[in-house]
Length: 168
Image (cartoon, rainbow, N blue to C red; front, side, top):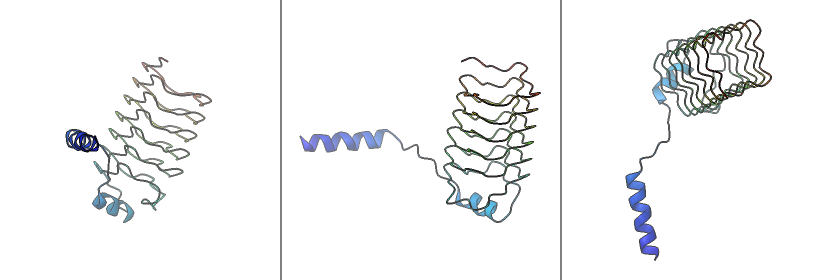
C-alpha cells in the first residue's frame, strides 16, 4: 500500500507544477540600491525581511509584480503603480497618497488602513480587495472593479466612483 501512495504522490508532483512566486534578486538589489525606475520588476512574494528600504515614494513601479507580498507600513506616496499586479498581497497600513494605480490588478489585496488620498484607481481590478478603514478621499475609481471589496469604514469624501462596479 505504501508503494502505491508513494507512486501517486510522485505522479501528482510531476503533473502539478509548483506555483510559488519568488522575487527576482536582481530587481530587489536595484531597489535596495536606490533605483527609482523599477518598471516591470518582479518583487512577487517579497516580505518585510527582504525589503529594508521603507521609503518607496515616487518610484516608477509600472507593470511591477507584487503578487503575494507582505509589506506593512511602507511609503509609496506619489509612486507609479500603473498595470502593476498586487493580487493576494498585503500592504496593511502602507501609504499610497497620490499614487497611480491605473489598470492595476489588486484582486484580494489587503490595503486595510492604508491612506490612499488622491490616488487614481481608474480601470483597476479591486475585486475582493480589503480596504477597510482606508482614507480614500479624492480618489478616482473611474470604471474600477470593486466587486466584493471590503470597503467598511473606508472614507470616500469627494471620491469619483463613476462607472465603478460596486456589486456585493
